[in-house]
Length: 538
Image (cartoon, rainbow, N blue to C red; front, top):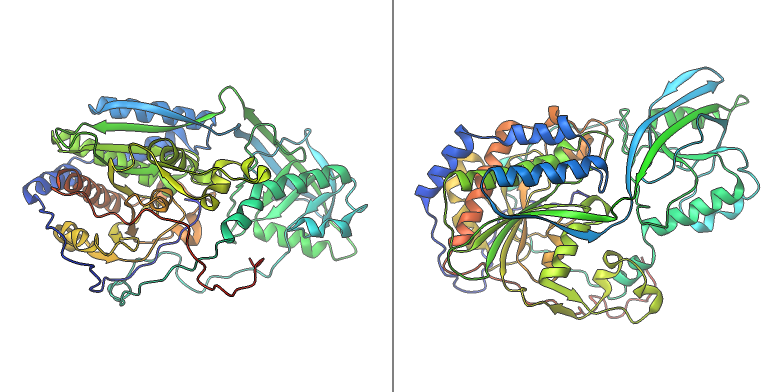
């Protein structure tokens, strides 16, 4: 996922009025439990996505392989209307090989990864380093005339972050039982527009132009985590907007060593080599969709999704082969049981999540609701996802009310402990009923808190009921998220089986409920929380 933001709390009595009972078919749940625990294929699915295919960068050859394989698996299980739905993305990119070595004052191999969507070096390049911390265009001027022929170290060195807490943890009963606190939104009407004007890729391209003008050989940044972990994340994927200066990420410990040596009378020299490939045969990325058709409630459907794409420092196991495998396993379970739901059950494997939740946004924009265009020509020329939150009013499409519930998995390999109701007080008693059969499996918490950073957020932003499950954190945030050790070894089979059972149950409950899940109002432009705040803040 792009970032982890899940608040965990128990539910207080905050129901806006009586809500119709949503009966739970416990005989059907018995079948789901049997199929999901005694005949599971979730780990075989996860192993193919990770060990066999590996990291699945959007539009890379590995992602194309994953798109084809997941569609075939849905067909093998008997799902209907299996398809790849495209949206404009940009260039594919993949790593062939890379290396880094300090050659003076001593010889030492360093841990390195190319930054996504930066170009190859011209073979092995050699040069002295210069530590030039630059995080904004306003910091360019002091470095003019000082970077010619240099390898530029752009991160400000820090002193490290020795861990003080265990890397691996589960939510305790006490943490899950904390009193629920409804968090009021903080509305700044200008914040979305300010954010749209300062996208990550925009600064990256300005920085690249400056470094190229100054004659820098390459640039390196420090890994944001200690322990030798690498990430390599980057966002300059748009066609016609590719950097020209190679960029690489060094392990934090290696970076700090170089920075210390740079302040002595023996500044270090480096050898860097990066061989990468760009893939331009198809600029579209593809969401993978598959259905179990409904028998009534014409046009209505429920949906589960997870993002199939990942970064490529490792195999993208907990982020997010885990969620993808659970979604696929829920589909397999329900087809194996021969269910005939009232509403269609749709399964989605999203693309482009790591670059800004782009795949699910494309689905929302095409099928559910769009937003009015920007009047400012400069803003209107920016990518859709960059301006989405700044555009009003929301304009529902004809299929807006057909999607009655969406459930998302993107918090790693931890077992489900509950669900975030995303501020929807009317949905709380329904979720409590649906979770009741799984209390003994550790899942009983319903939280009113909002969660963000993954594929349900654009649905929530237009008033469609989209929800993210609460999962045990394990070591997702501490050392796995986007890192070079995110491999199959860190997946938890028992947890993933439990998650698939609960997801399949939620989908069947939502598909067969007499009434669809309660919806929030269609959002309109909010008023400022502080009407007297001075404009121009962050």
